[in-house]
Length: 257
Length: 257
Image 1 (cartoon, chains in turn green, brown):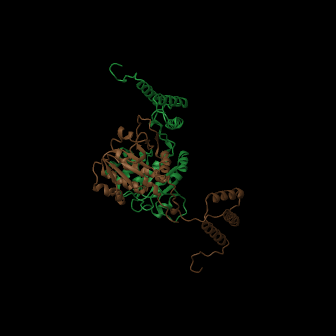
Image 2: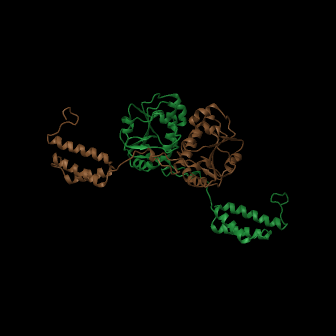
Image 3: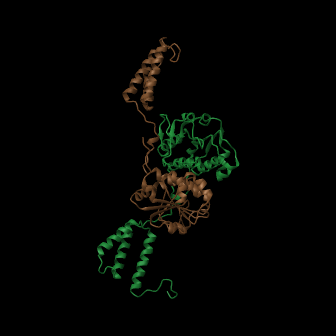
């Protein structure tokens, strides 16, 4: 199975870091973005940039740092943008609509797919976004979390939001799945009958309620989502059980077999 | 509005780090967990633990490190667990079901809520989980991401999975929303008629298609989800426009007003 492609329209979503203090966070944010298929990083008045620590923490995502746009003001960062989401973890005295990343993502993806420019704006590590910065945006988003201990570092917040975006692109993980050949219902039933016979044959039902035991085993093996190869292994085993019981068996791996 | 509570049953979900090399990652993982309402950390043969770097990076989550269970083998870490999810980012030759965190979370939460013990198992930073470790688990989970650059650090992976768990607990962010008093439809219509009158009054409709303009303004203000207070501000403004046009206006803030 071929690897699926990252949707091209994710290039219309930019991540904006407003006044970041720590270059390490810029690097980690770039790594988080690239892992989730995003590429456009905009930095508003970063304290130290470029900086070797950013490159170190970006790991293989240093290309995002090379291509990052560095501007003086948030307004410049938002040029051409139709939806700007301000990340906040506190209550704001604004009637701007507040939603979670999960709630807002469908709108962001569908508008990015139709060619609009979208921005997600993260504030300074210590102070968050100023009221003036929030007022440049037309959406508020907040990541749900423990109200008694909410301590999401800047790069972690970028990771969560970009994960949420990527996870809703419809990207499938099928290329990581083993190819399966599920047993059909009649193959499972054939195995169950073989199991019934074997239990009967070796005297397991004596003084037991055979109907109940058989039913229980059918339920188990129907629930277990048996693969065809597993049915073959189990039936091979049952054959050997019957042979061993009849005293006719030689071990499969004995030299004389 | 009161802060909502973190569901108590999250204590039935443990995060297991198998053979972590870097104490900083253990600290960051603890911080990620606590931010998402989880508290039970289990460490299997950590390279350095306890360690001051773990405490530094745990920030306010050092209590999770103090209470962490340290064991020798993954089997010990999984004592009493009925679902163990192994995190993987590569294809495994196993017929264990593979799903995303989003897909598996409903089952994990409902089973944790009914008192079962759940584990999510993360491998070593460099090598991931061994085949023997994966075989101790009955689920495989994978975080979807860029197939050409998938570089999720250990603590970031813990953040994504715990965010996914928390986000599906039904926790509401309403306590961060401003209380709103939405305008009713008739209040919006009253404002729109006031706007029509004002446009008429000051001669804005001359040589323009007034029906089309009025309809466009109604659509805009119905879409804008007006708040009652905003209707009041806008109608106050329209009154002033009419007064100013009639030459009867004094600036609101003039000394002689």
